[in-house]
Image 1: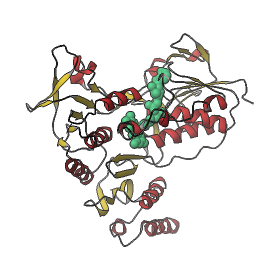
Image 2: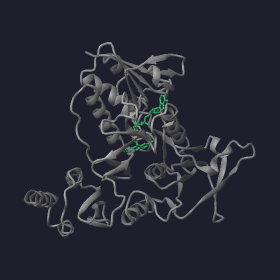
Image 3: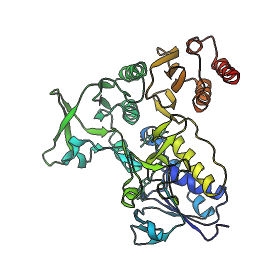
Image 4: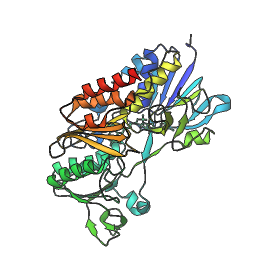
Length: 422
Ligand SMILES: Cc1cc2nc3c(=O)[nH]c(=O)nc-3n(C[C@H](O)[C@H](O)[C@H](O)COP(=O)(O)OP(=O)(O)OC[C@H]3O[C@@H](n4cnc5c(N)ncnc54)[C@H](O)[C@@H]3O)c2cc1C
């Protein structure tokens, strides 16, 4: 039915690759062009701050699909190739190698790039020992400099920064982690969770300095290396390596230049269509209206990228897509595996089940009787049930949640009974 049609996917990351294989699985018979600017085969990103950085993974072990899987599914993978322009009037994309591809459908899965540190816009930003972490090449460069005794300064106390710090300290690197806010993970977690992570890192030997603003760098005489990080409070931190992790900027320029609607992400409707219905956007670059939260969101996580890719594959092939599920994310630091579900922004209280003294707890973020998000450590059952609470927007009884003798299963049953009787 669609045998002669061309579908082009821009970006061969988690979302793009999943969409390509999902399209085949759903019966798309036409051509699939998967265009990615990375030279290496599409690979997992999360291990770049974890197993790969720790030297426990090879590039091959990170591949999203085996090298021959693409040909086996008749997916034309163009690695090391950038899509430079979309000509919507002719339904064509231009590639960096001079090729032009026609499309009936175009899927933008362009992800994002690290937010740049303004004070590193000079020589420091180009130094070999100053890195952001988004690509395999970044991870390789950082890994080679995690030499015992070296001094690493991590700028940014978000998940990526903390994971780099945890990996580095285990490699006997001296680690100082700086954040401008008064606690790590301030943007995404409640103060007790930040305190839990700060304690974990300090016990491992990381020197965490919050409320600290970087104002510049000291360079070697030849300007090739950063030798120290300078802070506004006058502190000078000698450094052999600096890693900055201060957030992500979605890659929307291609979409903007093509006249598509962009607003902190490429704006899509429920069908993942951009303001041009034959162009869709998925993953880190896409901004959508969440049914669960009733507001516009853009989510940076692998599960979200995969879910939206599968949704697009189903929609393009005329199959019913799964409805929006609660977004989730994970982070591994030391032996502690954190799994988070939902978006906590706007919470008015938290309820903690378990104890933050041990790595075994769940923190519920509530707005009234509605659970917005849950952070869980070593509580897989509560994590899975929390997904259901958030996806179904179940109203819970806070007093029950506060009582560990009542299981989450019972709380869900009570919430469902309440809904059914209403
Ligand atoms: C170090 C690190 C650790 C992480 N840890 C976790 C974790 O533990 N859990 C989790 O859920 N998420 C984690 N993430 C986030 C997760 O990796 C992203 O949410 C996910 O990769 C998003 O997938 P994506 O396909 O939307 O974007 P990406 O994976 O970024 O893929 C987009 C691709 O498109 C390419 N591209 C962009 N523009 C063009 C163009 N014009 N032409 C061709 N190609 C183009 C980009 O170069 C990129 O390769 C981590 C990210 C990093 C960097």
